[in-house]
Image 1: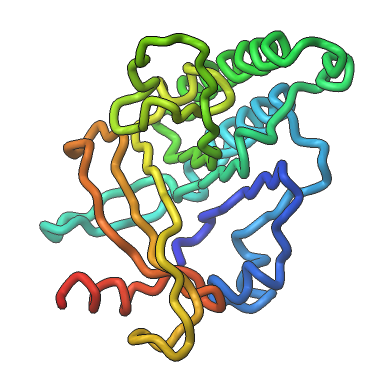
Image 2: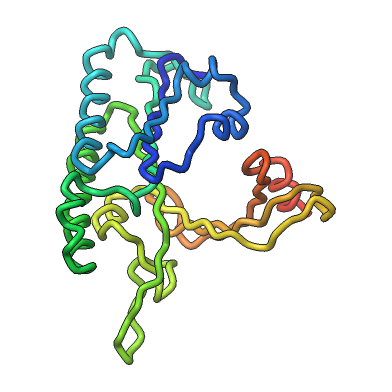
Length: 239
């Protein structure tokens, strides 16, 4: 673990429990306390989310000289860098504005537009604020079915998504995203199957990438007890 590295997990769905995190990461509570913070008190919204990002960025700027770490690249050269900070948002679909309750009486399309505008504001500011500070924002979203009344087929909202697939939260977030991965659950696995686990296959598609070709598809294996299995996934790919 890199000293002073940190993960801030904003669970807007309220579905994450620390015991599950300990199982998936195989870390003790003492180890998690060093770098992992779970916020699931239902007080996270688009306005204070950016405030938190700004606070993290400001703290790293103020303590830059004290928290710099030395890393070695693949060529053996040493570099002084800021430790990584990960801000995980789970999920965009459940991320609302602070005035969401006041908008509950609005028609669905107006409510969606209200959230999309708020999301556009924080992601634009955050993408600029975190530059050069080794802060990475990872978000989870949920694909929804788009209902169309047109008799003509419509183009997909994003390349490598299906025509009827839609990402809630507005178009600005995927536009500013560097890497977008579509994950779909597949065939179930039982304990008495070839892999000896209870889980399922997962199909992953690179929808967008600024550093690699998009459209690449690959399969992974998910163990319901332990999370994604690197060993079984690699075994499957080598078969």
